[in-house]
Amino acid sequence: MKRLASVALSIFSVFAIISSASAATPQAVQSNVTAQATVTKLVIEEDIPYNFYPYDYAPIWVTAHFSDGTSKLVSNEVNVTDEQACEYIKQPKTAYAMVKATRSTGNDVGWFTVEYGGVEKTLYFSVE
Image (cartoon, rainbow, N blue to C red; front, side):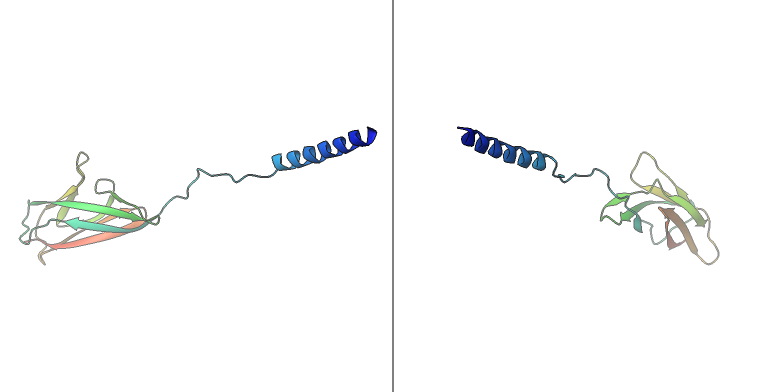
């Protein structure tokens, strides 16, 4: 009887050790932290007519492409760093911005440069 009690106690001890060891086993943790995506390029789409005269307007769409493969329309969030023969006009209630031809430059070239997330892009066009 003592031998049976001793065997039972030994088996119980083994199960206790195994269960405490499995409780202490580290589990994989899923992190909700994601790395910040950076801007890789800007794409400017425009609907500027071939004959673009002073005081004419045309819509502009600027899309930022990110390192994680996503993209976002940022026409009204860009910083305008340079304008020549035009005015870049943000339209906060729309998905696009507008460019207004202000005057001919003499060489009939206008442009604007926008910056977003450290990336710059320039669009050139003719002004009659």
